[in-house]
Image (cartoon, one colour):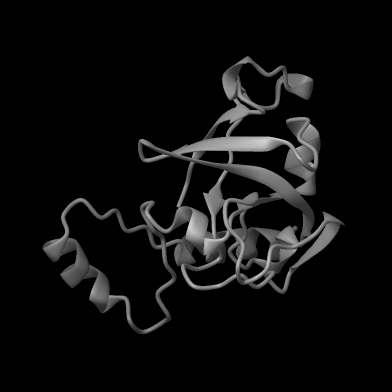
Length: 161
């Protein structure tokens, strides 16, 4: 699920001055790697703080590059707007992410209990894409985006480089 960062330590995200003007407003992706896991993704490693465990609630793990850009540190509280619903938590870990792995990664991770009432995203295994049509027919407000062709194109470009 995607969310927009709306406040850090109670101060609105849009008013934060970001280095080099890289982003007009501070935003990020608030998500769990799946709806039912609290495991650290295999291509991530904690470089600050502690990873949340299976009983964690309302915690934030942030990617180290984003943390530097928006000047967020361990202990800061981040608040996100996800489809009109707000969720927040303290930053309890900073992660280094291997963005070259081409696995789905996120700038911000939160444990499933803190985001259980929010709109969800999911990964559909290869060969089961036909389920999407039925899902969209039954739930017309669902947005389905197949990122496989995008990742394949990026991989081809990188191979050429």
